[in-house]
Amino acid sequence: MIDINNNNKTTMLEKLKLLTYAAFAYLNVDSEPFFILMVLMCIDTLLGAVKAVRLGQKFNFRTMLIGYMMKLCFLIIPLTVALMGKALGYDFHHPVSITLSILSISEMYSILGNIYAAKNKVDIDKLDVVSRLLIALRKMMKRALDVLLDKIIRF
Image 1 (cartoon, one colour):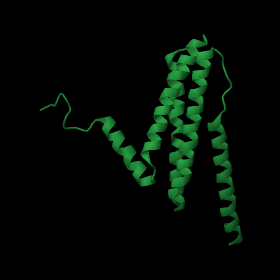
Image 2 (cartoon, rainbow, N blue to C red):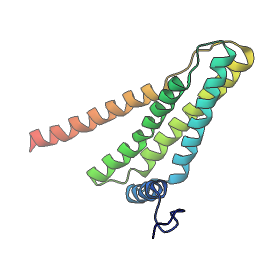
Image 3 (cartoon, helix red, strand yellow):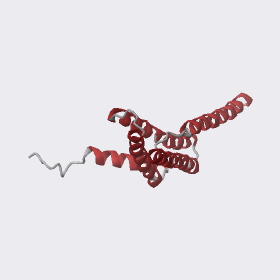
């Protein structure tokens, strides 16, 4: 018999949620700051749309969706930091927390900028914190690789 309400089957959203929580548990990542960051990203996206309309800029949902999808890609950053820690056998709980904090502060900075710009009908410069974070993480990884390669060479 077919269950129209699909009560006995796990929905795709529930499976994704379960997979996400399992990944967080495995990587020792707190899920609450991660989901708070997601909420901040949603708020920032909506306020960015409000700002664009207030400033008379061309606005369409496709551009907004692409912007939001790019923000979701930023969520991969803390997870890759955690995965790297697992691969190296270290607990990277604190670097992951710091990364999540930087991204959250960046979103709040953007939210405040969008509110200010929409209220005053003036476009303001934004600080690209994510690019700076990516550069800093790449430099950190390069230093770690240099140390490891030096150990191999000396061996």
